[in-house]
Image: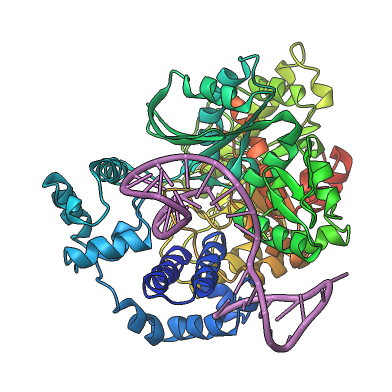
Length: 591
DNA sequence: GCCGTTTTCGGCCCGACTGTTTTCAGTCG
């Protein structure tokens, strides 16, 4: 399958061949940079290719575009295949082992004839067990031991961490770090700070008047299982839980430079350094150096960017997706913030009925209390539609009426506990889009709702054309349909997104005032950031919902806000930044 | 192989850490 990940892997394999066959190093880098750019996309590269939009990807020029063209048309690239044949096929699996790069992988796979990629890792393990790697020049026992450890890590490695999991792991470490009087600042950096949906390794930064000493404190964290490397300014450790964490430490006067440097992304930093170079400046985690060798130090990030003539670029935008050029023109968007959100329209109540999917668990009162804390103006309940095939229309109607009574009664009963007049209640429903694009509820029953959310919960196997037809048909089937929930249906580390012609769907939503959900559930984050930006480009409107099944999950909203920010979303793009009156008139529902 | 606010040719981010090295290559982010 030609998903982004496999295409990126292919380019990296070709780059690795270039590196060991003495091809120009900069051609290797071009391939590697392109691989990184493709891997960072949420939109399938193939979709961009179909729309002739490959040239929008930074670092992708005419040569690579023609190779990719061949790849999508024929399933292979002749030039790549010729290159890949120059090395033993068993070289490539070795590259996933930390500490083995192209040169070492080539030496091992050549010397020991690792020609079968499926067997290479197993053979490597046998070589280590028999101490045979020591036969290579300049290969001591310590290096073999290091590779042995990394090899074990590869075999036990699980998938990437969800952003929510990574934050919780890092928070424990940060609490420990901040406890030391040596530590002035401590923060998550890297993809964690950029709020990428999933995180590989966790990066933390600390500042101190004695950075090396502060790192010693970091090394004493009780949860550390092994120290992978430890220098004066950076350490890498593995925790008992198996996760790798890097901690970087600088003088507090360099805190801003460190934040900038280790927040990345790699491609953002490369682009930023290119800009700096054009101004005869050089950037590093220690500041900005001018041509005379003088280094300017930055204790905060604002002044670091300002020194380059740039507006402050929020971490979520630092992906080399045009943010630097936009900052130069001082035209960065004013990204949406948590406090802009005034309500949540995708909640599941604890009303008991034969539901098509899972029902909520918290009483309405708990949701209201939580919403009150958040200063929300409204909550919308959108339980799943009653079972479609097993119930009659009459039964469904009764259930919906009963549910409405249940919610209203509960709501009114809360008057003594919450100042409910400050939080309005809306009664919606989340309705399944069936395989053929029909909805799992009769139109006259949809009429009874304040608003309808529609979403896909089955038949994930359809083709792109079938999905597009299915979604467009569903969107057009009733005027009460206001929200398309978790549009791609992806589950991070679980289920691939469905393919659809999103441009068509976003255009339809834009023209018909249907809002695309940014589902804030940490394992969904759907729409993904790339598609959010695409939706905004096509003038489609959005809404951030938590899809809560228990009241505490209202706190997941931050994940949706971060994802929206990564998609360059502003307050004006989001339905639930409106106050209740305006929301009501958009939804066209009377309270 | 890519790219342009000095350039369409001649550059290409920058530094940390490790290992096996007396000065550097490989790997990583």
